[in-house]
Length: 76
Image 1 (spheres, one colour):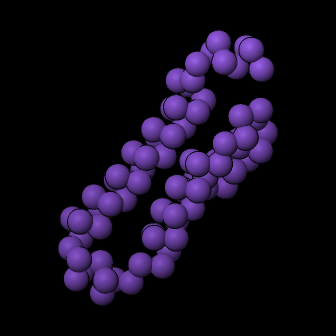
Image 2 (tube, rainbow, N blue to C red):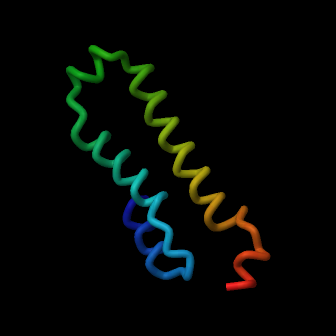
């Protein structure tokens, strides 16, 4: 997902990096979180934090590529 978001950001005129940045943060969390840390904080809490970051990525993609003011884009 992280790589795809970078490519999309690079290939479009809307060179927004926020979704890729959030995805990179999520990737790091999933790659480097230690099992001991996850268990100490609670699996449910860890999974909820993953869900929240996925929702942030979704919201950023929607805002940038689907829900922007068309008038502003046409004027530029």
